Image (cartoon, rainbow, N blue to C red):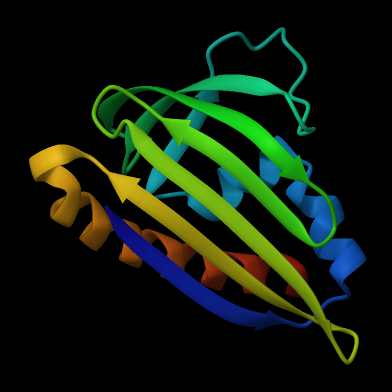
Length: 144
């Protein structure tokens, strides 16, 4: 198992960041173009709450199909978001997001444990670039 950990300071209050975390559009925006997430069943309302599970057609760089990615929410509050995720190519993608107030700004940390057998090191390399990209997109989203 390998772990990716990235931290940034976002120029927004923690409440605003947490509010945006609850929207599928935020995930889709910050992930693009590295990854796209299309709901398997677009009629199901996406609800981020403890115990919720949702599935998405995942494409790397928006073109390479990477199977159905399932997100199971274990914790979802203003301090921490924790999910157990995965798909047939990467069975373990356990994601934690930590939100900490820093003088009216938000210290935002993504921490992801990855296990994909012999592919783990390659997925880990991609995930390092992906989470750095996500945090840059978060900064852009919060400035708009």
